[in-house]
Length: 485
Image: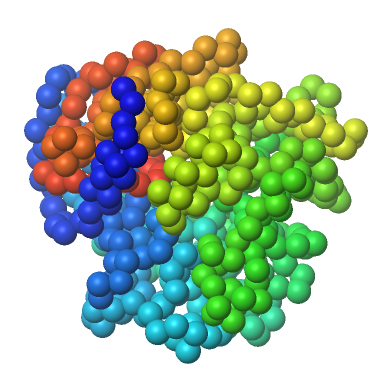
């Protein structure tokens, strides 16, 4: 089904309507039959508010974080939702206007209001994880916010017993008292260890590596100097390596810091220069900087494996150019002109030969990849995500997708004008495969449903009806009954 540009823009605009009401443990209506063994809690994060004081945010990454909690309890589902009460959120609620700069949004008032405003709003809107009994709302440019896993009450910023305190130069400490903690940690389902990173601007710029054990104790962060500051959303972790893909997606730092442009508006991707791969050995030793020969930009890494020859195999979602996510119509235009859809690809890196190879897994657009949990660096096999159907003329992510790594088989389910979110697996390990949970915006009814899908063929087992629409979000997590608070 091909849709017109107007139909797509209308649907996307309706899907971004702000959340107006917070619910408390509302039992939801279910169509179909819930799997009897599906007991636990689904947490999901994404922007829930898109303006302050009548001023629209300039980028999806700036919307205030909004958490949905679905508790599955012996065939019933209970729903609770809350905005993350960050310091910025509370202050702007009281003031009724925008008080901070965002990733893609300048404060109203022009240059005088933005000049040297170096503290940016932590929107806490990108992801959510449960680790060592902590429920954390994540935003890669700042510290995580800890939430009560039952009530979703915001308990404050989490500094891991002081390990996230910024101890660099005075300017860095003033602009960011706590170090940034990215929205994409890697959690080893076997050992319970969490590995994450943060990027710190400075002279030199730095990549900070964090290790948090199964009891929630963070080791002293490791600091790795960078030759330049780039935009890295996610790193890959295997038994041997930590790998950061460094695109030539660079910020015009002077103009952004002086308040002349937002960080997003100052970001430019050199589409002719290939990404570099920073390889950091897990067991210590010097890092290596590899020229991949592959241009573009990567938000998400679906899987990372060590290869027998000592190299690295990554399944990545690669964009030929940096997406104009602050302007949906411009994104459509750029994709049509340049074939700029993100696609699932396999990138093989040889750290000894200083070379890499790239193979495309599918011709259809692909994003928000997930897989069942397992040991870090172990094969995950199926990769799930949202996708563009092959017959769709414009980049409209209306399909759910399953890619089988071993065979290359691609299964898709097109939802027409409805928009699915990230499909979240509920299987306990990578050795099993059962159900996926995906929040879907229903364009005709202008509301949201939560789908329970068979992970093998993407058929619907049950549909859970929400009392309102939930804007398109980013990431979430499933917490089995044995681990849920």
